[in-house]
Length: 327
Image (cartoon, rainbow, N blue to C red; front, side, top):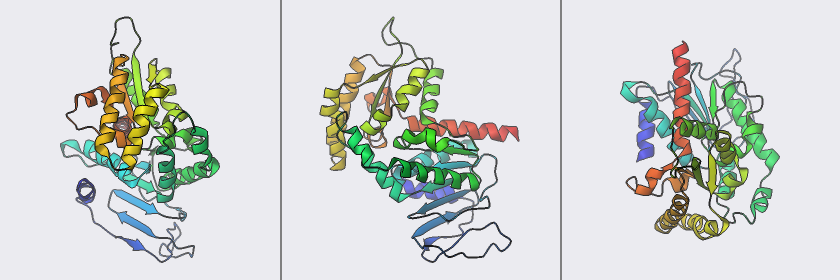
């Protein structure tokens, strides 16, 4: 129901031009003959156009784009994450929070690749933290993933995006390489959450101690260590779960999620959160979309947690507003 409401809101006040499966080859070109078709390998493709938003999902190779699809100065380019559902969750926040007080939502272009999603998912769902991270990563072609992400970034740039975001924890493992040479601002989720925590003027839980930020995430995200690095650069002390606690809480919680046992995963997550709270952390970063959605909204433990993707959405809106003010 939430996805349907999002799609209705995104198309509100605009003309739905097409939303169907394209089987025959098509090519978008910036030449004089805009209806010219160029033959290339056909793959299933679903496209939705509205007056201010464009969603593109493919399985296969993208055709080149030589003409900007959107020309607004605050257009957001979004590289999809582990799943289309998580990407839509980010879009829901972006649309809802940017369209408050009757304002129009931001123009954006989304690039979602189910093949790459599956590769990310296999890495995120690895249930051998601390013991086999290299094995999990060796199953993925590092060079190929970076190349795929860079092609998507370049597609978004050519399509008119003036700012790029990746609402995906694990894809930030390759942020430095993917963002290299980018012609527009490319927001990093670690910078966004660290900046928000810094601006919150937190006070240490214990007198005389440093500000302590806990992190609960999958092994892929923890191994990449970009959250730890960004937080430490802002002067925070980072607290992670010890190996034994990870093996008895987070690992089985991920396994429970894979079995659709949400209640079991929820109870294990609560134990992990309590362990960090006992260690006097100020805030706990839940760097996992699945775990962020496990606890009910009225759970007291959730009040001690923050979702870095929320910070990324707010930072994206702030950037768009700053561009609008310059006009």
